[in-house]
Length: 358
Image (cartoon, one colour):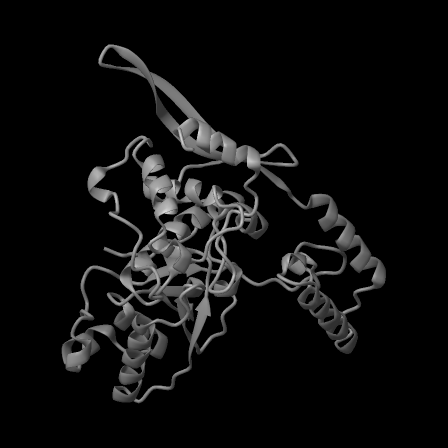
């Protein structure tokens, strides 16, 4: 069974824009290059040597958790340019197409070194193919695909944004693209007018049940709604464990690093109280604690990041907007605490009230 998941709104631009002739391993931005990634690199290099092929292997961090640990390349086919996406179960087939080798012949003749026996040859799983739209030369005038764009205003720092703008202006002048100051001002005004901002509503629907003959309020439904400034509404409900972690992080306005979550009784007690009240929870899936998160290459750490990834993926799938993700997912990194930046005191009070937390 393939573990690869393609975002509903398509592959991220950084993946579709990879060059021909290179292989990329997609990594988790919070873990960096892991032992699993290195093992995959070694395997690719091993096949490169065995079949006398050229290689250029890179890593690329991506936000979408369903693409973590995938291997991608770009190839030309009769159906147009395609991105091939594989995991360990389909990497040999992908490499055969990338190098122009006969897959059946390779499967029949290639003997894996012992250290790679965990990677099966053949099987029912094949690389995922994403056909890219045909490229069209930009025409004069302002279009969404003009060479200069201020979409990068969402960058992480003023200095980086300023550097990108200056670099684009220099390219425009050096290559005589003909983009004028009026064009740039028009793009700025258009993007300013179309920029979306969001508000978050936590929707908790109660129900009354009777326990020992007395009415008790329980939670029938829980989910989240983002509303943008144009009236668009986006509903999402991550898996139950991710949802409970999400709500718990909202209770910590300053955020917590993953190491601070590890062994944190206050965090775990709040998570457990929320989790056990959510509909469709399962006692067998309730973690005993969140210990063991301090080792960045450990299984508990990776699984915890995957739970956070499910929240991020849900928001990106709906909005296709990194600004929404940055504000309303659980975001952080190795040095910056993870938190829900857009969570307010009103959200925190609602969570405490609805789940009976102190």
